[in-house]
Image 1 (cartoon, protein in one colour):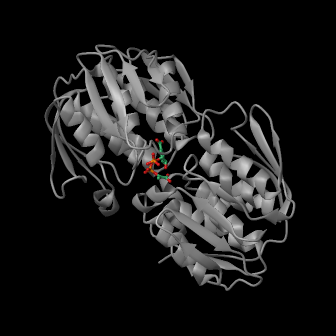
Image 2 (tube, protein in one colour):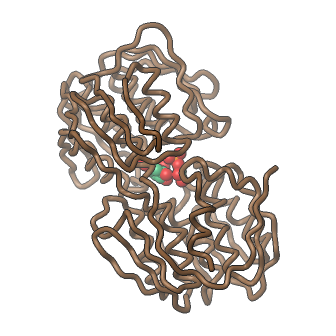
Image 3 (cartoon, protein in one colour):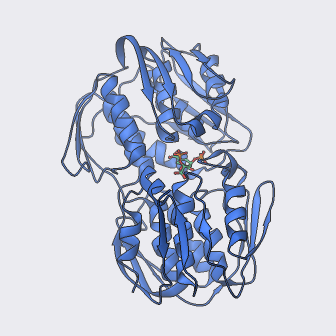
Length: 426
Ligand SMILES: O=C(O)C1=C[C@@H](OP(=O)(O)O)[C@@H](O)[C@H](O)C1
Ligand SMILES: C=C(OP(=O)(O)O)C(=O)O
């Protein structure tokens, strides 16, 4: 297995332009494919999750041209539902932003498809989304375990005056129904069951749909109204913002060991909820400056915090390792769904932090981390989880080296993460 050892870093300083947002890239690609007209996407993320969406769209008959850098893509929209004859298999890796929205859109299209993925994808729930689609008349069957991919979808006309979707495990189920609902044969009232998690991702969905010409009525996140029989309209150009979750590692490094780190490509105008990660760093004691297109963090002594981070589930992982550098314990709360992402992240983070010598309490839906004066040099297992690999790079900001097992797993969302991280390490 490949390993990367990072030696202790004495100073952090610099500017980093983060690659395009995963969440926006995959939403915009799918809507550009469905839209009437041509869309040029710029600053597209080039990573495994996006590649899976691109390959799937190609198999669904969508024509696009990808630039050599793979960050610009001209998509010829099909102007309606997908129509493919014969049976098609789409392999979607471990990309939730491909699996969930494609599942819903394909259920409403004229296709016969199987959706498959990596072994971990077969353990990531999708039953709440399938249940909602069944209410609208979809034909979806589980090929292995009930409630999990792989799935077989015999697409067709969907309609329901009302569908209810449970939002308490993943917001991606609601995102998927929202994106598919304009293709339904009737107007739909989408009602949310349970406590909606990761709410800011719904704002990304609604904002992207609006840019593709579809307005949704949002009744305070309790229900949503979407008109049926609509066609997405190509906006001409769609510029993908930088990825706010990817920014978190650089911003945290600045907070811990700055110097000053300026991240460009996202800023106060960003639609991504993960920009609120900078507020957590500020609450811990770092100095944060906002611009429309950048966020700048300057280091200061940090103190532990006790916060609900349900709204920033991905960036919150970065707080778990930042906590090693704060005075006093840090609790990250209301993050049960860490358990159903790339790995059981609550367990993975607790296990790896303990290897470093930190005291950790792993709760059902929270984690508390106590800093320790000396850290052990450990080989961090990454569980094929890009974020475990990236957030443990921060351990090198201590006096102890850190070894990251399988650093290549960052390819899911940030293939050259370690090279970019090196540019701010001095
Ligand atoms: O819609 C999205 O783009 C995402 C929603 C979040 O998932 P959950 O809603 O499952 O928390 C997030 O963790 C994921 O990385 C991306
Ligand atoms: C949870 C994540 O990914 P996915 O989009 O596959 O859910 C993530 O990127 O942290």
